[in-house]
Length: 403
Image 1 (cartoon, helix red, strand yellow):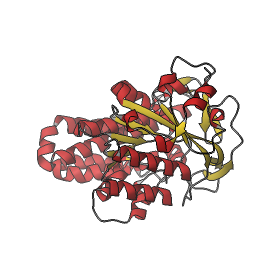
Image 2 (cartoon, one colour):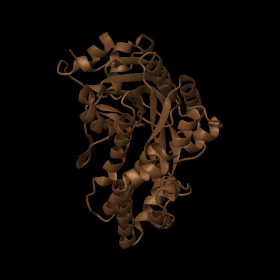
Image 3 (cartoon, helix red, strand yellow):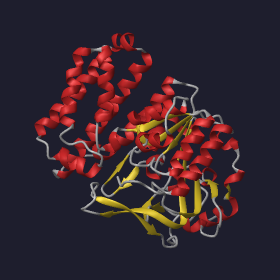
């Protein structure tokens, strides 16, 4: 059977989804082929509602900064706050700055879920959110170590900002000795946290220790990402430029499950992050979030790709007048390419879902290109994802600023 035939015979409306599909899963990741798309927020909200109500999932984990997300989790647990302010500032990469994200968080609070930001701090452009929290923790647990954090904050102030490209450029312009000193300071702090674990726990409590230690780990992984990009600009191969951030997100999922063995986690991240196999790029492959989770959890990890056949997506255009170096723009989509995954779904006028697992090893002519914004990315569909959701039309969500 061809892939197109399998889609025709087995794709079903999202409203017919059976809870049994997720019975044995501890982690379900729901993707999207572009950020900041109105319909992707709403279909993810619908799936979150289903996974919490029908399947017993308990934690919403978003591709967003861990440190910033602590305030979102507190609000979901009932603390006071304004959802717009929380979404604007507690969801990084500007992904919270739209009505659809506010709606999703409001429903998550009503559902009683917890929240965790998976990612490194500062939209991958600043270690400061994590360092400020670590400093407050050390004021209680180890005042003698506060000066180490202060040194890291001073160094980060020389390059950190709101936007990734200018921050990476400023970091790379730093003297290599300064970069090395920061990396050594992260190693020193990590050693202190580990060597003095029980003293630190006794001083400020187990939860505070676990949170601060993880924030420090994520800041150190962002430091490795920055070092990798600086090496690439210097003409050296550096997989850490791409791998450290996905490692950080995978470790956050493990952090949640290690602290609560009964938790079941719904991950929301880009399709490229959640696929079960390494991501192929020109000249190298790298383990993404989903590859780490698939190796850790096997069949208890499910990857749900989300894509679309038509509409208007979100792209980026170089813009020297923008603080980010580019502008977020709407892009009209052409009909699906004939050799794409989306072409097999082009005849459906409503959202459809398909379980890919029964098709493994059975089909011919399986497409291995899937939409990535207005372009396509080589994707080993059957090995990379367990299920796929395809929407007929998408439109950009409103945003306040570009990343």
